[in-house]
Amino acid sequence: MRFDVVTLFPEMVQDCAVNGVTGRAIKQGLVDLSVWNPRDYSVDRHKTVDDRPYGGGPGMVMKYQPLKDAVDQARQSVDVKQVKVVYLSPQGKPIKQQLLNECTDLDQLILIAGRYEGVDERFIEDECHEEWSLGDFVISGGELAALVVIDAVSRLLPGVLGDEESAKQDSHMNGLLDCPHYTRPEVVNNKVVPDVLLSGNHKGIALWRMKQSLGRTYQKRPDLLLDKELTAQQQALLEEFKIELKCK
Ligand code: 4GY
Image (tube, rainbow, N blue to C red; front, side, top):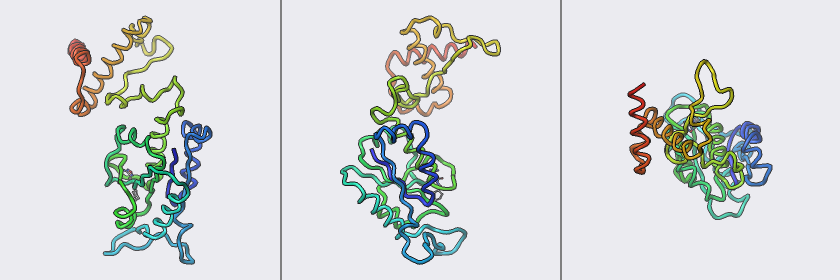
């Protein structure tokens, strides 16, 4: 899969993406990353990419033309079928695991990282298929949001994670929060590791983990349980968790 980021800070994106899981995916040839700087497509002698907002007010707005030409180059640099252009902003659709899962079918995902007060609305309307948000807060530019999307989608691609660290086990892949994890030593601050995890009983461990996932979701993110169908076994595990909670 190929990612293209349109950004005034191409080094920020490249320097970050060469590390960790994304870096390994790129080295393995499972992911391609290209960056496109609108400044390289500015046509005036000052290489202008922004201008004052119509109607007045503080800050600057990214101009349509340098952005449009940068996206066109990104599109024309490969001949593939499934292409999506996404603008990242707090006005976008909140990013959920499901949305990212659907991206794994794409050949090319073009991410637009805005700066200043944002980009000319006509660019969003006419050149972007979708607008996505990390959440209800503001960061200084779309680069970090683009990196989040690249990381989250890359780790879903076949071969990127080893069998050991498989994405299938991740929190949210099943619509639930992750279970607690423990490693050595067996006692920390007088707290012992839950017995079942030391038992070697794999069936028992799997059931305990599912119960914890359900219980933590119920306690920390009850909203996630509203749009989820639990199996009869899961309902029973959650009831057990609630009873144990009352006993504490
Ligand atoms: N939240 N989710 C977000 C953001 C700020 C474009 C410059 C967010 O995705 N991006 O806060 N982006 C950018 C938006 C103009 C500031």
